[in-house]
Length: 363
Image (tube, rainbow, N blue to C red):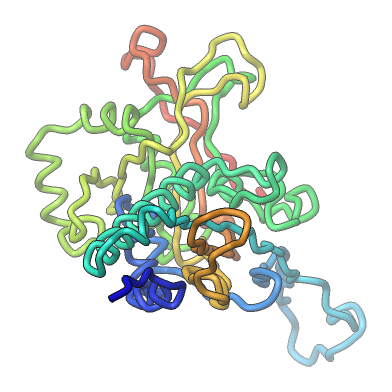
């Protein structure tokens, strides 16, 4: 009896298990930021995410008894108070290529195992590809990248809108002082001040969900606590999802501080006169009610609509795993970032630590 080899329909049947839900649950896991994005993902149709942002305030008026509407008391036309940001979809795909020599000589069960191994590898590599750009993805340098969190947590152009034109369209910022000659101290007090600045601007209901720092920065923060203080804070915040998911977290003002090896951080450079040149470690203040991972449902976390194929120019089976989407937001003032943090005690001893200054958007 002649032996048969698998066809593309065989692989189509095997990949039916890997539904969008399964793929999402396996790609967006492993770090606090990914898990928070997974919890707050936003499906978006069309060309991209276009949230309305409020950028001005039209105030009321005090009036005397008998004052009439109109004239100088009430302008005929309201001023512009809102506009739309535009976060276009970025396009990612990861090819899954099964060598014919590795598949056509396998038995049915071996093919299933081989398929699982290949798909598992692609899910893991997709997570790594997206994670490497999660913070610092630069669309200007490579239009095919997702734009990183660092753009939202800053005071530059984001979503096509410039803070020079829309002053409140910026994050809260703390950075080096005296023309960047003095670095920011890696103190819990500075993180606390940033939280208080954000809630002072946006309200207590807009407290950050998460503060993210590099592993080295987190270690310095952890060193400022006793073990009892650390453990007691985790118990007191046991209902926080970060604790429930099992991540290590320091709490300040009720906000968890977590580490991520992809978060930006490097040695602070003395004698520099710009934020970028002074470098240093950074802290990101994230609010996932307003910072969203958006995606196109039609082509995200799905296989190629045409299924598996066997191209004529090489002896393999081919399929693609897709993500079309990006990172955007609608209320940038709820975000924050600390720049120019110096961790080196020889450069910035604890005795020289002081509370930094927060730049308030629109102030």
